Length: 382
Image 1 (cartoon, rainbow, N blue to C red):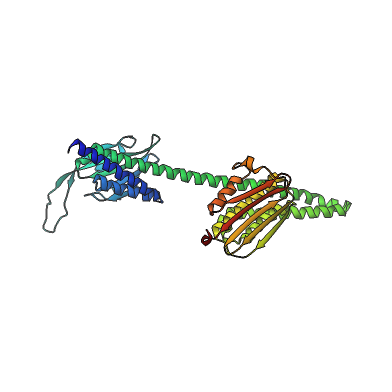
Image 2: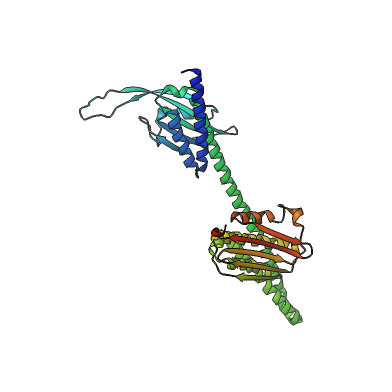
């Protein structure tokens, strides 16, 4: 083969590999990507057997395998092949090896001493490396010596790189989910401490003094009883909201006005006037209910922390062609332009609105309050 032919072959292989890498981006699981990569290795490198082994506590464990070669299956690697993995476990380059194996054909009833045949198999041991961290190996075995060619070793290395990147990406996603769960648990714990515990502690103090206070000043005692009722109602409302947060699926399952009312009860227990206005009864998709709930939650959180408002008005308008959520307060307001995408949960609310194909409109005037509006349109109106 001429140098020009080799060059053209390299270019064609590189183009095919690039197209393949674009296609596997749509795969949803690590196993799917691994199977696609091993299948591509069979096609492009001409191997009969391909497998991926991942390191687990210092040992290589079979993760995925495809194909078949005499004496090889996708579940068991013969002893003579295992040194290809164990001796090269932490090697950071593609390694070629060949083995001479005795094969015994299947016996027929007339055979008393079948003849043993000897065959040579060729193998590539490909490292799965990301940031100098060996995560496993890809083992490719075939019957042709062409596996030793530089181009095929380069292609094997490229496929190995993709497998390693896929694995690292999956690890990042898993770690992010774990971090998100931990952060959510921490937030719920803080809510329990900040709101429920404080309310119950204050209630316990009132309970302790009420008997004596009743004897001394019944008017004051009645006022403290009213305060006690408010504290207990607030703690109960907080607990209901926290229990709802611990089971996010319930937010999508319950009616939106019920979940909004649970948020309102918490704010009302703090002495703030909150009015919920409901227009229309058109059912909303679960994802819209969740988004509206989260936007309201963040907006109310901002009001209680930053606005110094005394009144809040929430409008939920559900019509056949659209749904509108509007949250207004009479607080101190702020400069929307100066804050932009930053601060007080505005970016979170925008992300929630974007997730349902809507935009959020925030208007605020210093000394007069803030209005947050989200309008979601049904698909036929988009």
